Length: 284
Length: 322
Image (spheres, helix red, strand yellow):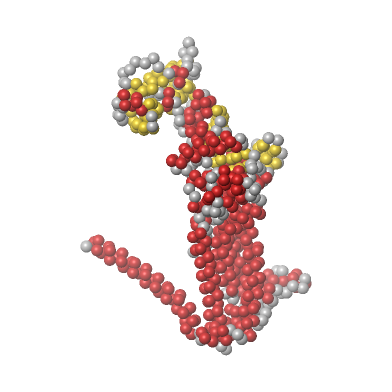
């Protein structure tokens, strides 16, 4: 009898877990599903053809390309330094880099204004030099860099830390300079971690809203990105807003999927899967 | 030469310091006239500016590169020649993960030699191999080292590997070199109890009294009295090699030292057998085991001559041998 009761209790718990998962899945999938059922799918290409959407698309592409280039270019060597050197204050630096991750985007926008806006910490000096950042396209770039960059750097640090230091040591004893060791050994071995971080940061950057609207405003053709356009169009044309939504879901989903396929392929052809993609936030 | 010692003794640290991967606090590292490190003169060459061939313990092959790319990383010119020489040419396009332990070791050696190093550094070259391939690889490695005629430092925790691979052996314990000498030096004139433990010899402890006519009389801790040719007074260790012990039926009268004991385990090893007698290990012909009808639990006498009883200092009061 007791065994049966225990079995029943075990089954009951499993059922409870399954129920929780089911509810969660339904809640997460429903809005995405709704987006596709409510949007006039046949009209989507036409709806996306309006000037405002095309401008927003161009602004989004340009600013994200710049911001991505900046955090890849600056973040990769910085992450390698943080992953391979132990120095006083390293934990503090890591915490500072992670701070934007937990900061509300609106606070990030205000903080950027306080730093670079008129009367801000550096704003007046910059203005005297002829550089006015707020409400310019560079403000969008900086907002994305501030909010999304840390996702990449954090994941890149973990990616480089997962590279066995004995492999980079081996490269040095084989006559490779620090730079060559980085390029030939550390970079390819950390590639999955870097890729995972980049996917997260890219998605976060394309979705940036709060910091951008405060620091850069929502000027059509200048600083209005796709997400800002959704917000502005919402009242006048729900269908166009939905169409942009469909576009962004396809974009983000496509990138996530291609990244997962790529890492699965890498893992299957690589000889030591344990070295790849450990501690990245996207399971590979 | 080889460096042997227990794990954590600092053997690998020595190799890493030579290669420039770790910075010593003081001292000097030089290859002939070429100074690689000198704490006083402030010289510290980068690892890529020191001509070393380092074979790491787990081989540290680059997992994302083919065998050929691994070897060519050290030097592209010699890659093909080395792949041929080590019999791994047919594996050139394989990834390290697809190789056996012995194959990986050959790739690691080929890669280390591709740079044409002035010194070869081998960190536990045999520890990643299973027992079957170990002996074959050890013999092949010895032949290779003889051919290369390169100054080589081998690090191992196994005295037999060290004896097979090197002409000179240094025993390191707790970061200190206890003894440096040939294999024969270490076996016949061990510096202390640690060295005795590493050579695989038995160590008995007791209290010695110097005899007027030369030699010593030692009362072992179990109460048995033995004699040694060497002269000593006070606490000593008595080292006896397993192959120098003869086993006799109980009650035998023998002019040599005899230590009675009860047979523990008997491990046959081809023509010979390792017999544990009390705390001693004796390596005797398998025929002896049969002739004496030895079984675990049998009583037996272990005999060895006073010349074979080598007296060593017991490093810090009664420290265990290993």
